[in-house]
Length: 428
Image (cartoon, rainbow, N blue to C red; front, side, top):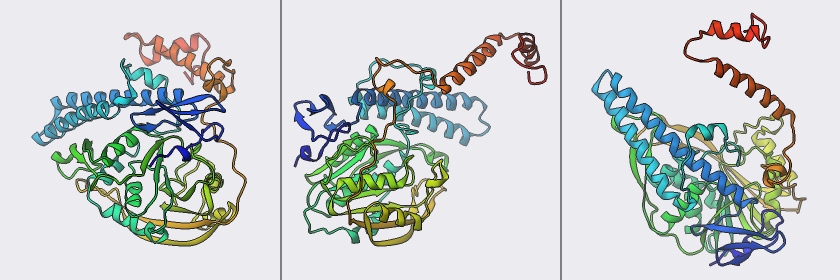
């Protein structure tokens, strides 16, 4: 089973054509590559590839830096158990760096760059997502046992018709255990969409029956031996044909309008920076007539704009205003990220909402992570108020750093700032 007929250009929504090394949009004349065997369907594929390469290198640099800090602390360890913890953690961090190099080899980074460079030129796309964000979910999905995964499937299963040949897409799929489990109990195709190549490459490997080692760092390890555990991730068995992982942006999904019978959003709606109503109108646009939207997870919105921090009742009303009719809801208190090696675990009152598309609504404007002058590097960089502020603060910081010479005290540096009339005496 191929997915060519279900994929659309994230820039113009034209159906993509399959070419030897990926996909092509005739309208935009954009080539979309494949990463290993996964479609790479970001609206600016080259920029996104460079950005995730940066995230990969930064993650490895950060792991090695943290490992060095652990080893440096060993000299002051007061007891043998502390030495064991620091040693095992350092070894685990170094081992994790090697695993990242192996899993993400398709990103094809050759020359590493210093960690400080990445801190100065920090990546911005997608917003606030690091390579290892939510990486604990990988262990939950593929090695802690089946309790959390089983309970999640039990909440969603009553709203799925297992005998109907239908096309399902899981948005924000992450480690993609839910997509795997849904595909196992249904017929037809299942797509998992996420932006993070670590999750996509890893899930694709596990679905084929392969195994992958990955280090777990429990939040509150039960013993020193539990502080860094090299786990083996594996699926219960190879996935049946028709399960596909797509790398792309949930807010600009590279999916054909009106092509999906079921769209599932697990633990997603309340963590995105965009208002829930905007995503719901986009989901409405992607569903077939009478298609089903299922949301699963906590309803715990934390948007910077308080207007968008919906309660459960507001979310249901928003769904109705977005062209949906509510078919049913359920709530269940269940464990969340309960590692068997940690003293810390959460209990969540998870909510499952099932709605069917009852009316067509206007599609929202396309989401833009980046302004045009970043996407098109030949355009002039505007002098924004933010840049003016950053320029001034950078100059001041650089000047102060230049005054640190190993001889001056804080008071002497303050006197220089006062003499140069950069700051009043008291502020300096």
